[in-house]
Every structure is written in C-alpha cells, then in structure tokens.
Length: 196
Image (cartoon, rainbow, N blue to C red; front, side):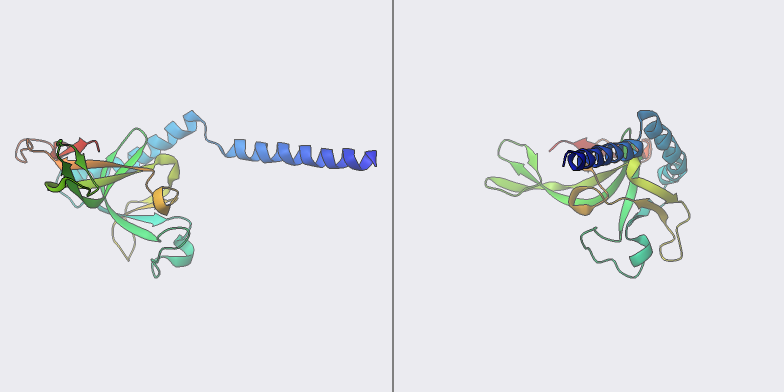
C-alpha cells in the first residue's frame, strides 16, 4: 500500500515538474521579445515609409490558426475568430504593431466629455473616431510583404488571441487633427489620439 502511494506521489511530482519546465521554456525572455520586435520593425518600416509618401496603407491580417484549413475560401467567424481581416497599417509602437481597423461614432456628454456609447444626455459628435487595434509583437508569427494572388497586400499572420477572438490586444482612438496641414506637416501628425 505504501509503495502504491509513493508511486502515485512520484508520478504527480514528475508531471508537475514536466508541466512547468515545458511552459517556462515556451515563455519568451525580455531579450527574445526585443529581438523579435526589431525583426518585425525591419520588415514593417519600409511599408510605413511608402504610406508616408502617399502609398496605400491597406494590409491583411490572417488568423495563423485558421490559415491552412480555411484561407481564403471561408471567412466565417467561429470559436477561433475570423480567418482574415482587412486593416490599414498605422505605426509600430513599443508594444506592437498598430492598425486602423474601424470607424466609430463619437458622442458628447453635457459636460463635453467624449464617449463611444450613446446614452442619456448625449448627442452625436460632429467627428468620427478611427479605432486602431494593437497586435503585440509576440502574436505575429510571420509577415509576407508581397501578399498572395488573393489580396496582393502586405500580410500579417497573427494569433487571434485578443478581444473577441481578434488579433487586437487593445484599442486606441484617433480623430483627424484640426491643425494638420497636408502641404507642410508629415502624415504622422494627421491623427491625434483621444482618450475615452
């Protein structure tokens, strides 16, 4: 009986150690994350330079998990999210790549504060906000700058591990700056971030 208990405890301890060793080996160190960030920035910066010169900013974000099975013929959402999504490349940030992904109506409260939600005592604001989602560097598995025969766009192959099974960990909101002069100012100054 004692031998059986010792055997079971040994198996449980071994399984516990194996589990933790496996997941610790999968965890990226800070240095690994910075190296990955630099690799991605080197691939994305030429596209951002083109965008600043007036070229198209449209890209495609492909669900890495669903790519082989569903791309490009099925883009229905399931428990793993959509197969692919269109977006516009905005910037590389300290924590990921930022994409414009939606337009949202702004509402203004009686006190002048802005919100995305329509509620009592709120009226629609005269401006829309651009929603920009941030994809963490560690979620980006592969980048294809040339695209494929279906989209001909810059493609990001990403883990859809974010909000509502999207590629986005969080969102920022931007409005067009009232002070932007397209003849004199760089394109980066066209959008001002607002806090909601």
